[in-house]
Length: 107
Image 1 (cartoon, helix red, strand yellow):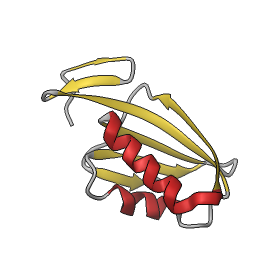
Image 2 (cartoon, helix red, strand yellow):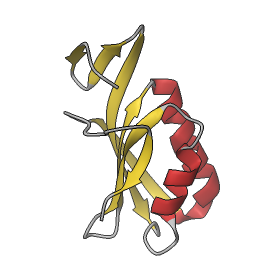
Image 3 (cartoon, helix red, strand yellow):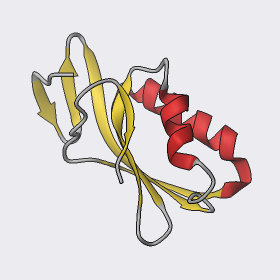
């Protein structure tokens, strides 16, 4: 996804406005297959990014795509993990380093 120009975590690419977001999930989100499930649930969506465990027990998802596609992924994760997710914090990410399609696990 090559950016033509960007403004505050968003960029214009081939006729659509894309976003880059950092989404941090809190709760019982490590040791339950969260990262692998994020990869699987991202299939079929026009998103790219990374997911990784944080040392404090949270999981960080840095994702780029249209607002609707990102919301679909977050909705799928919320639905799948239900009571395991206690809190979701979202903020614009300064830069996405995704090198392809889909979500990749970072160790």
